Image (tube, rainbow, N blue to C red; front, side, top):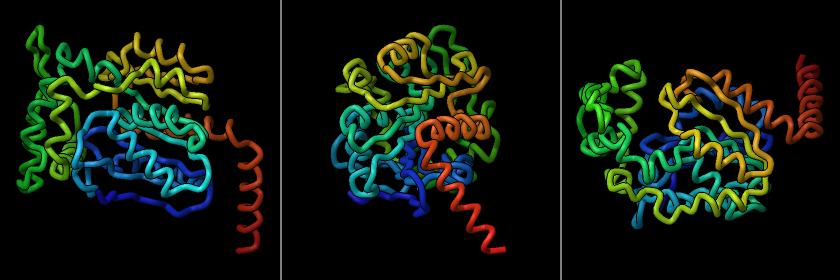
Length: 293
């Protein structure tokens, strides 16, 4: 399998950024300009996403962990910070548990856990991913595919009330989603629709083995966040060093909806890990600017 990996090749702590399902590395563009001032950004497309090859095996959450650990081994020579959104957050947690020597800290942006697992059939998400499956890998012109994406619906399984994707995202965001879906292996969505996406992912065991500092970025469940309060409570009680930042009124795509607030939280967290090193880098940077002038 050939992986597509964006790499800033800049100085600083390696920061592995893992996107959510159906997305690709460019989802993090709202953050990379800011975080790239202190970190070397490493942002892969997951298997079956973007320009990375389709998988010859499965697309369960646990299967993506191999991708993350392989990227750390191949791309870094010191422990990295992992930033994961949604699928990427669950993978980041598992990678930290599985390969602790490779991981300095973890940032978890709204990991869905059982909202996308055992509870998915009782949520509007199931109808959305079922419909999105028909668009994955589409070769339609992008403008037509974006129109189709706008018509995708989140249908409440009880009330049958439906909300269109086009009522939740602006036209530019719909085009980006359409582009992502056009580069998606349809098989990626099959375990989600079948309710088997989290098979083999032992959340309790994974969280209990995390020893590094963790920053949890928690979206508002009433605004479209996917981390249920009971799952968040389990996460916080299972990890000894877990800092939580809640953003009321902010939906699941936190880094897109509030990039400045997310960036500020991440910078503060990273600074708490590397005070002395950051100060040294800052002094060197100041001296270099002075010499250039």
